[in-house]
Structures are given as C-alpha cells and as structure tokens.
Amino acid sequence: MLDFSDKVAQHFLHPKHVGVLSESDVKNPGEKLLVNDVGHVTRGDALRISLRIRGADETILDARFQNFGTGLPIASASCLCDKVIGQTLTDALKISAEDLDRELDGLPELKKRQPVLILDALDGAARKFRGQPPRERASAGEPLICTCFQVPESVIERAIRLRGLKTVDEITSATSAGGGCHTCHPELEDILERCAKSEYKFHITPEDFEAAHRLYGTALPDAAELAKNPKPPPSRAARVAEDGFVYPETSPVAQVAANKSVARKRVNVRPWNEMTYVERLQRIEEVLEYDLRPAIRTDGGDIKLLDLKENRVLVSLHGHCKNCHSALSTLKMGVEKRLQDSVWPELEVEEVFEW
Image (cartoon, rainbow, N blue to C red; front, top):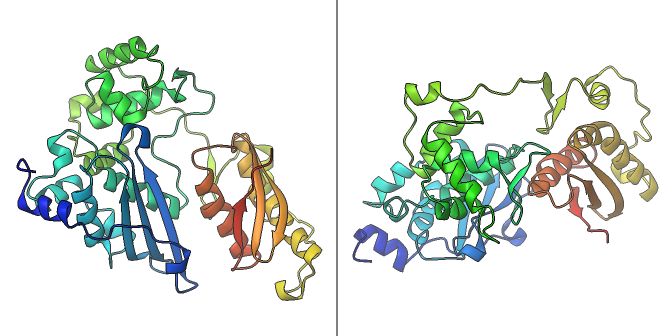
C-alpha cells in the first residue's frame, strides 16, 4: 500500500458500500434493481455493481459493489459508489477515470495500466437499464480468433485500440482471448503487429473513443490517427422501437411491426383483473407475437411463452438468443418493459431453461 495515496489506503482498508442489493431492498413500485457483472472470476479481476434506481428520473438511490478478484478495484469502487448515490444516471456516467484519479490522489488501476472495472460496470448497468446493447458486440456470424472463449477479431482489435493494449497477456486480460489452449496466440500477435502499423479493419465510432477515454483513461486519438479509421459499414435503414429493439426496414416481419396502421386482432381488451388465466396468456402472447418476436427473429432468435404464475411470465429463449451474453438485458429491458407497458405493470419476466 506504500505505493498509493492515503485516500486509496482509507478506501481499501475501510471500503464503503460493500455488498449486494436484492429485491428486498426495493421498497417502492417505481424503483428498479439493476445488477451488472464485469471482468472474469477465473482471471481474478471480477466485480459486481448493484444499483437501486428510481425509474421516473433515473436517480441512483443506492449503490453497492462486490469484488471477486485482487484488491486493486476496491478503492475505486468504494469511491465511485459513494459519489453516485443521489445522482442521476446521466450525471454518474460523466465520472471518468481521470476524475477518480484526482479524487484518490492517484488511481491504482491507471498506475498498473488496468481497466477501471467499476466504471465499466456502471456503464454496462446503465446500458442495460436503458435497453442498449453492450459496447463490444460482435457481428453475427463473424469468424472467431479464440474458439475457447468465442472471441472474434473485431472485439480484439477494438480492445487493442481503445485500451492501448501492447501484449497478448493484456489482450487476454481485457477480452479472455488466448486464455485457453493458446493456439490463437500467433494470430493475436499478428493483430497486435497490424494495429501497431495502424492497419485497421474495423470502424470505431467517436462515441466509443470518448467512452474508452472515460472508462479506461486511454488517450483520445489525434486527427492523423482518426484518418486511418476504416469507414463505417453501410448503414441499413432501421427504426428503433421504444423498447430499444432495432427493426431493419428490409425485414418483412419488421414491416409488420413498424406499420402502426396494420390491423391486428386483439384477443381480449378487458381489464387485466377481469381476465381468466387463458385470456391473460392470450394477451401476453399477442404482445409477444406482434411487438417483440419480429425484432428478436431478425437477430436469429426467438422467444416462447411457457406459463404464467401470478405475475411471473415464464419464457424460454431459442436460436441466437439462447445463452447470449445480452439475454438478460433483452428480457428485462425489452420484453419485460414492453409487457408492463402494454399488458400489466406488475408483470415480471423470468427465463426458464428447457432441456
């Protein structure tokens, strides 16, 4: 601890807001519980953040963290949780690695060239809450470089450029690529060499560069470096729905979903409390069929309604959605929110795994 400031030592030895929030901590109907994990337990750098948020104005009412690896993130996590309570998500997301570095008189992660996990966790939690996809999401069907951990080349290149990675070990720490059988290490070396020459394959948006600067403390690229950024892929016309799903206009099912004038048969229009069990199932299935499945199927997935137990809607995911890393976000911020808005505000969606 001699290498770090007194403030870091105090937060490390006497951390604030350690623990996890649960549903029992949510006291009011308008509050939401949000939990997000980052890092990898097997590498010793995992961290969980849990937030209690007032949905009406996105105010963070409480924040807790759990650290599952080395002690490095404890001070920054303790400091951040202390700062964000009482702030809106928008204001909390303005806190950067540089801010924490000043607050703690020297952030341990920046001294060790490590990502600031608590900022990454907060950013991911906010994106879940708002129904946004993860920042580092690979394109469907992209070939894998690391088959052990299912990591494609685009994710590796993004990590190298956004986090300033220089070695295979740093790539493994950031993405898990190369942490298994090691047979992909020569390819990882080739990607590092290619990126060192500014020979890039994948476009990175200015927003992503800004986010990396805030989350990891990496320098923003200069004009010369930005000029080497590949052009973005051709954008397809799309409509973003209120629940965050993207409906490509070229998709036939999306045409149906996007067309507000399409007449649909409503199976039941009676109040929820007056419906029978079968009528409630039919109403939920109607929303799934017309409002949600079109978007889910455009990504190669599907959702199946299994049962309704009191206010718990039991579903199973299929296709690309099954075991997808963003499945929880899809269920909670997409499916559950739409069902609450369209059917009954007290509904909760729960995934059931069919074997």
